[in-house]
Length: 288
Image 1: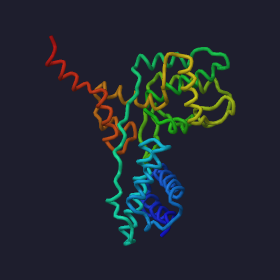
Image 2: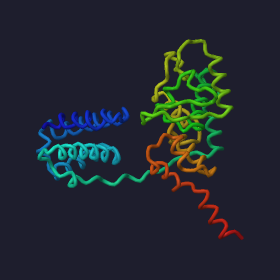
Image 3: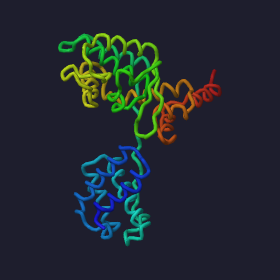
């Protein structure tokens, strides 16, 4: 069986049949492409453990470690399915999955977020009032909801009702997302100043159409370029949302639900950076 056929079989039986997310499907298409670029579309039965190790070393020459790791994870899963289907392939246990790279969480405090809002909302040459209102709304929405940038861009005018929206993220199931009253007011003001019929909540002033993740990232890059902030990205505000919730001693399970994490382990990483209960215990022991 060719590598392309093995990946196609895996997508059909393990991803599409299980109704997994489009992101998962996309990652396997990407991994198939990378594998065929390196090995050629050869029979998957011909792959050996040294071949896979060499492939991983090749990926590391131009990919981030976690990206390279993801490609190995996908290839291993496909080989494992082939093995279950009684194909004479490499024992998947011989495909060693590299350890995940330790992540560094970059986040802003509430005061820093407010300062960042001031930067994106400040009058600038070439930035209309409507554009600045939109940029402030982008920052406030990301911080108060923990949305991913793609989820933010998919919002429509009518997404929020009663300060609540149903968001479809990486999972097929929707999750509830809430906004505070001040963000609801910002949405109303921004839409009031628009004179278009575009259904998207956030639009590009140049095209009049829905903004893209690239546009949002450009807003952040420009804000950093004209301020004291460095390396602040849309995802930084997602981290900031999680950190604030944890600081307020919100149960980790609720934070995971609000952020759309399928695994609690993904959310638990934030406890390495802020753990108010642990701090409280320490302060009780060491207070003078």
